[in-house]
Length: 223
Image 1 (cartoon, rainbow, N blue to C red):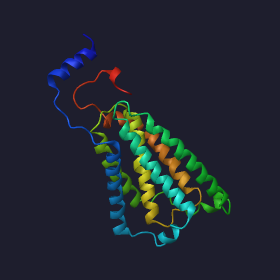
Image 2: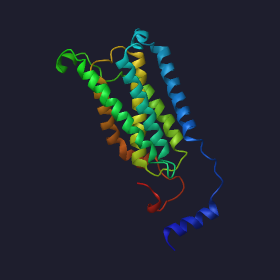
Image 3: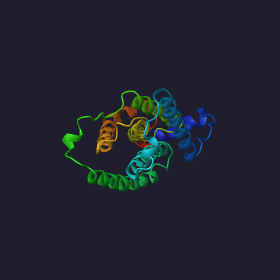
Image 4: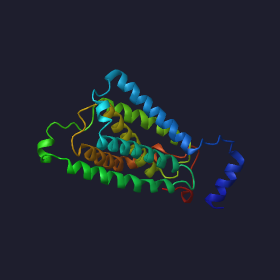
């Protein structure tokens, strides 16, 4: 008897009824609400940037914020979809839209630079040491708790997309709070740093996203 037959026999003998997961849009909205609550909580103690109303009229800033939030939501949707058999492919098409938007934003940012990058980088602070980790870690824990309810079919990709989603949400939140994180190309450097960190963290997915009950045949796992 092969491993698949053993698994079927064991499930028929031991499996218990499980609750159906909420729909993907509902799960995404719940995570977004949690993340917004974290941002509001941090802003209560730190305050919001004094020029927020003025920045709301800056098309480039709005484009960057929209793309940052869109990146967070796209990555979160991918992470949630990877735990549902048959749903792990279609959300990746959204990345094409994000890529096109980021290309436009970077081009606009480059065209607006008034001096050499070396001269403009002296006062850069890559991330806020307080707001960014609180928002990023909090949103990552919320997304992790949601994803753990599904099947860990692709732990490596799930870990990468979870890291991108939570850190992008951290950037989105801290830019609402701080007015010193708008240096030209700083957002691009932040995104590249996040992508590199997510790639390094990918192996953690095998430890964090594991099958809860027993050993699952390798041919039923995505990674």
